[in-house]
Length: 244
Image (cartoon, rainbow, N blue to C red; front, side, top):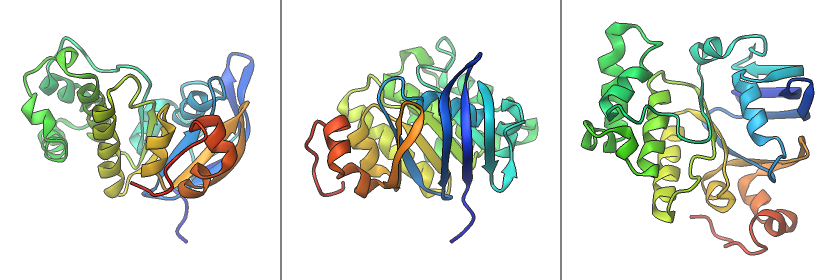
């Protein structure tokens, strides 16, 4: 087996003097999609932010592609290949799709901006179709795809997604999940927090379950989503046994 893309060793993280995530250890294989499951307040978003470096790490180690990154600021982690799309809208709503993509290139040398934009518009044709549309006038799902594309401009090896389908219609949720699958198919490792646990598990290779900031369960997505405890707590006690 190849070396994991991301390894978390006894990570304890939170805000101020309050740890939310406690002694959390896990590893993600390169090119895999992993869903992070847990109730409200379990520490899911806190863990993503700890990996990206936007909250306090009390203790533990974060290894990305074999290198310790826990002491690096977020912009250095981004340069190393860690991308993060936080929960909620994070685009520039009064700017066009084209302008948003140009803003997403701000960490790249000017000489590669056009090539980076061509790459993401080829991967996500909707962006070309809405090229001159203000981001704030896109549907929620289109905005989410734009925000993922803005991060993909820098070609991250790890993509952290916090609730990408929140508030979207079932159709747009499907579009967002399909986009996540296309991203992972290029070799990007994806860690996703998602309120639509059923939909996320159906596209995932693995799953991590958090309770009160700690790892409660981990395993293949198929195994976790058919576990009676997970079905009862997060899937309404009933889920299709066949994957989509």
